[in-house]
Length: 245
Image 1 (tube, rainbow, N blue to C red):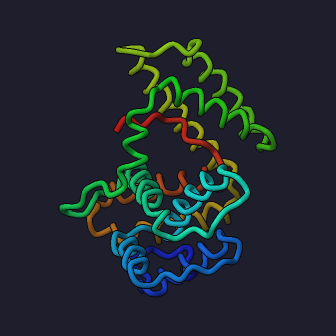
Image 2: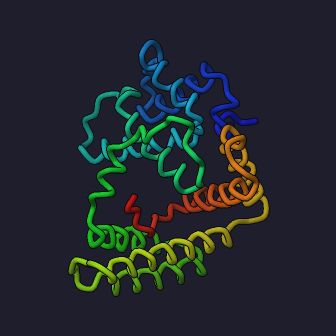
């Protein structure tokens, strides 16, 4: 099993930390920042929560995307700087798959999730239109058509940038969920059988630490949602749905 695909709960914390250390080294252009002491406690805590390595890597990527926008002169990043993003990505992954929190566990991410909750629906529509428009270039023909249709619908929902309230807002939020589901379905259609099988294995491995908490129907739904999320990530597709949680 490739540790990059392995569930955190099935990997020794030391091995998990070494994989994160290697990934951080690559992101830091080869500069090695050892994960020891408090940093080891932090990252081994990710493993203990069941945060899949790929989810941790996605959180690290998110921090670096913001960091790169600050300009070319950069110092090596310590893993503690990435913690909030890793926690936020994990909470988003957990909500998307329906994985229940452990007994007594609360949302450890908080920062980005709360910022999203306060974000306006109008701004979400504007950002999503920009992201979908950018992704249309070079997309597969079937996917490109769906993206084009989604852009047109988002533009209608935006309604000239006026705030959406009451029933109109709820209708828009529901329509965004429907468009998001449609994009997920289209993303799956672009996969080859081998790619689909690989993503299914990855989903099962990532969810393995949580299976004991989930009835069979919830497990099946979570596996499908994890495959959808992985397919969309591979195709660099934005999230259309608006999370008001």
